[in-house]
Length: 115
Length: 113
Image (tube, rainbow over all chains, first blue to last red; front, side, top):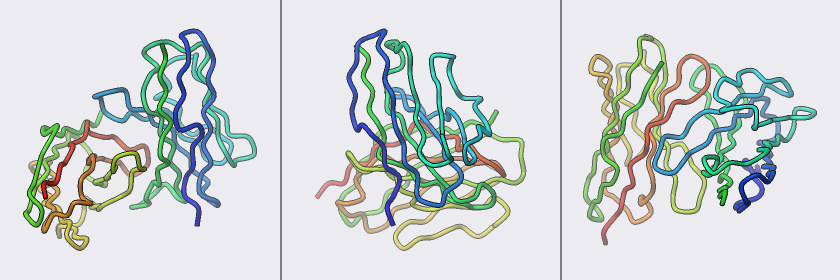
């Protein structure tokens, strides 16, 4: 079974540019999450999709971030325009259910550097 | 809001020895889940062990075990017979009944041959 995949693995962009990160969850997982780790800090929750609907987007830092999950399959996270403080590692995770001890499976992350 | 604290940014252990990573958390809830995730260098995060708060028995997974002290809000991870492959970043995480996960800052574990 394929795990969670993310593309690209690394992205280096200039301040003010746009970047789109992609996440492919494990097949059959309705729940998809985005997290971010800024250097030296905790991994922070950004948002949670259930199928194509945003269940919780309380962690989205501002309106420069736009997440979509068309058709309830893969998800994209667009940052436009990117700022220096957006640099970090963006993790995607997926799970089949949300209750109980259900595990979230993580992707390898996308390292974003904004210069 | 729930918080998770890992007070050891870095730890090291000799191969075959035992090491304990600390984690404390803050919550007002009585029902929740605790996790330890491992992220090896340049690889994805994987779940090492999980603990349900309502279970008094400490979880174990082979060489990995936890010391869960609910009253003290402490959730430490013990790695026995450490191996070179255990070298990684370890994250302690909390989850309420529903998502999301709340993470600590992580502890980088080095294993010395």
